[in-house]
Length: 82
Image 1 (cartoon, rainbow, N blue to C red):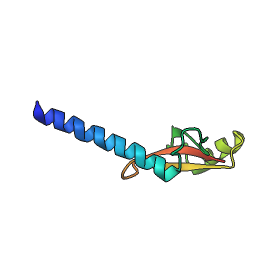
Image 2: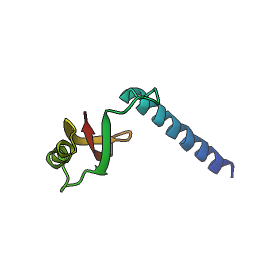
Image 3: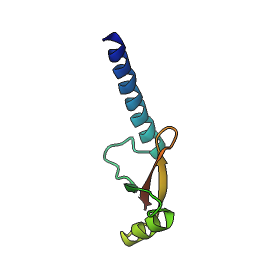
C-alpha cells in the first residue's frame, strides 16, 4: 500500500513538473496570451513533415512540422506555427 502511494506521488510530481517546464519553454506563462502554435494529429509514415506543412499552410498558418514531445521526445505531433 505504501509503495503504491509513493509511486502515485512521484508520477503526480513528474506530471506537474513537465507541465510547468513545457509552459516555460514555450513562453506560455500568462494564461491570457494566445499560443502561436497549434498541435494535433500524431505524425506517422503517411503524415510526415511535408504533409504536416501542407495542412498547416492550408489552415492559414505560416508553416508546420512534426515536433517531438516527452522526455525524451518519443511522440511526434504535427504542429503549425504562426
